[in-house]
Amino acid sequence: MLGRMSSPTAAAGRSLFQRFLSIIERVGNTLPNPSTLFALLAGLIVLLSWVFSKMGVTAIHPVTQQEIAVVNLLNLEGLHRMIISVVPNFVGFPPLGTVLACLVGIAVAERSGLITAALRLIVLATPRRWLCAVVIFGGILSHSGADVGYVLFIPLGAAMFHAAGRHPLAGLAAAFAGVSGGFSANIVLGTIDVLLAGITQAAAAVVQPGVEVHATANWYFLIAASVLITVVGTWVTERIIEPRLGPYDGEAKPEEIKPLDAAEKRGLWSSVIATLALTGVILWGTLPAGGFLLDPKNPTFLASYFIRGLIFFIFLYGLVAGLAYGIGARTLRNDNDVVRGMDSSIATMASYIVMAFFAAQFLAYFNWTNLGTIMAVKGAGLIQSLNLQNQPVLLMVALVFFTAVVNLVIGSASAKWTLLAPIFVPMFMLLGYTPELVQASYRVGDSCTNIITPLMPYFPLILTYAVRYAPKTGIGTLVALMLPYSIAFMIAWTLMLIGWILLGLPVGPGAGLTLAT
Image (tube, rainbow, N blue to C red):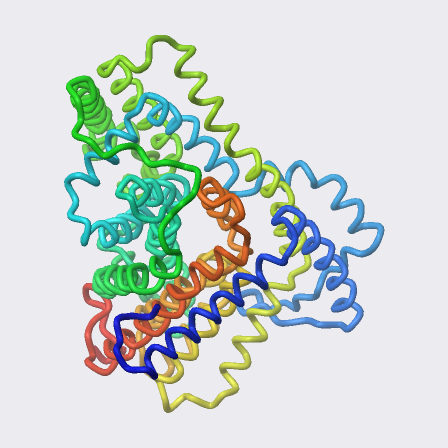
């Protein structure tokens, strides 16, 4: 249901929307197994590459000004390339190494009982009415650590809801909405802020040489968006998602929520002490000048080896905290217990590894053909042709929705912005608007549709998490589960952007909306 509305019209509207979601779920679930689907999509891309190359489809790259043509894979050269690239595509699939490396360390924390004890403590300490908001806001914070939120926080969201007696898929959805749907909302800066600012600055230099765009360019806007996404995401979860899911009657049973016993408290204290000690070592290596984790060529925290090697440190935190808990609580007695925990954790990811193999081939073929790049450039040209130069708000909204559509096929925020920034940043600057505002508009569209596209690299992983609680979960189930968030975020966030522009608020420190300010 959409909410507690009393009128018949409202009730009918709620029923209609729920029926729409059910249709999406049924249609999506008629698709083949996700591994099969990615294999079929890979074959379709090969076929389309031949069709569009024969049609002579091309585009002009906005940065190099060189012609981009569709690369035909349905020939002898393409066949040879696909044959020799099977293993590199699989091994180089971006989420695969991240997922497995993190899980090896986190498995120790799980095997020792640390995660279960910590979840019980959080659930007991968090009022039921705040649990959903805590999960969504935690998801927003988690993506400061690159892609760690996908691997670590989303399954924790499901586990927290499960432990609280609520439907675990609702917790998974809330966490996924915070991590991925709220990707451009945060109260702290991360590496993506640095990366996007560099791309924006390069594009802005075409109009204003020497211009500087800082990582803090959208900070005020991101902080406000954090509150917005938390509120809207909580409303969607509690008013739409949980009523639609109903009570959970799956085979997986939650841990009994009871106060921690003496051994568990001892283990938690041991874990806290070990974690603080490891954190102290990291701070010693990153804060003082010349710290051993700083890059001499760029001695800043965001460029440190801690940030660049965050996956290693997630593994290390899981290992150290899990060992400390296991020793303190006496749940780990020898190295065999530790290794068995790692083995069992990797075993649960077998279906994901199979999906990753086929998804890796599909994404590689899609990138080789240049179809995504040409699509983005052609679409940007279409927006330019709409003659909205005197309607900056409408033009910004058009940028938001166009980015959201492109995001369905090109998941990387930096890759999309590398293509779009040289087109939109100079165009808006010539209209008198700052590159910081253009970047903020782009980031709205870049976030909202992350959670509904199966082409997002981590989508198969989220599906694997969902299957643990609901074995019959398919692509349609997950898309229908996340679609209300995507729609709500798009509407609320776009309205917030419009209000921001009309009120003339700065999007970041020293980042006004017009070049005159």
